[in-house]
Length: 501
Image (tube, rainbow, N blue to C red; front, top):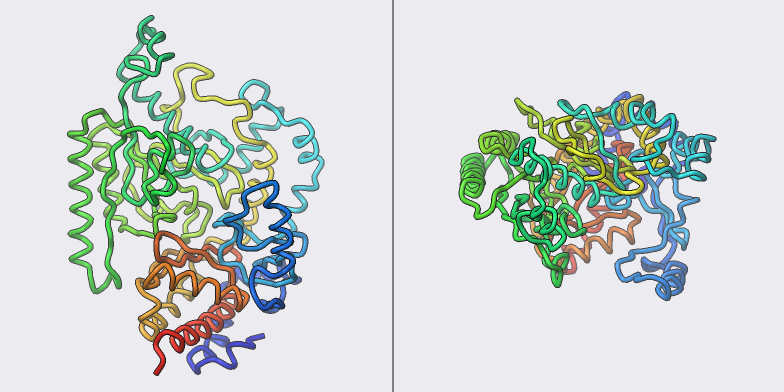
């Protein structure tokens, strides 16, 4: 079972026994879902992608742009924490469709939901939810999204995907701001006519503030708040919305407490100044609990409590973008729960691991008239049915608790490797299994990720040089052991190549 561990260093071999001892009860319950999981990764081609994936991608490239594709998945054969590709390679998946698979490939509860009569009816008769909601829609919302609603949220606005969720939340914030300023009066004729020409007063100068290196999506409003990589934004018109600095912490945190605290104070002071002095008023601030696409950039709970105090001081709404951090990955169902806020955010957006999308909010941010924040589908009951199954799997099997234990185990063994292999692994950081480290350069990161795939571990990057872990909530210490043995093997190969003794 620990093929690679047996050949690794003594410290690595010790992980096998330690992993079994530290396995939480939830993990032992969960293993019954994964009886058909492979015992370990297996790569049968000399390169990834292999010939079958390359052939499939060549065919697909006549129909779609495939330049971003890594390999072609065989999802009928993938199971649990393992993804199988078109060549029959079996990878331990620590990337999981860019952080979007919560409870394993071909999870039996999700398959049952997909095969249900309720799903068949929904798929055959997709409703326009805003005007013709189905008879069971309220119950489905209560059993899925509202079962895990964040504190202070009593409503949910369903959407299509993460960018859509943020876009709709921004519209809700802007409508809320306009309603507060307008009061009870009706729209003027000038407002209505100028809105059709995209000019004030009907199209007012109002902003959504975001943070440097943040990522909130690629639709037009969301893209104006995305600050992670220029390639996402080049050649696209954008709103002239303000950007505040986000803390750039130093690691290990214990050795840089004073510097990090000073950095967070600097960023909070800048946020306060922008909200005071920005040339156009700011309706809302949007922030990720961990800047995911921007390079896994963290900040302390004290920083986020400061953000909340400042937004409240200026009467500005706070939108927490939990598209990537939500649904348990950080060891809390919602990552912002770690902040222990005195007053909750005004909105919380979600997608990815929920396999559905939308934002939570209070009744205060409902638009003043129907059809103002609206589209045909307003989400999809089919996705809500899958979300209901996901929520049940997570809660009924204590998977958030499991994530905390597995994350501690992973971080506890990555940090010593960062000391031993300091030329390749730096700035280990994370919450739960939402973990990352930095490589010395983009080229080194690409090489490491390619070698890991050859070892049977699928991983991804974030920002310029970070390697990110985005496993399923079902990851156990045993899976971590399989990763660690292969990871240390890759690190040794890279050291011998780049720093021969």
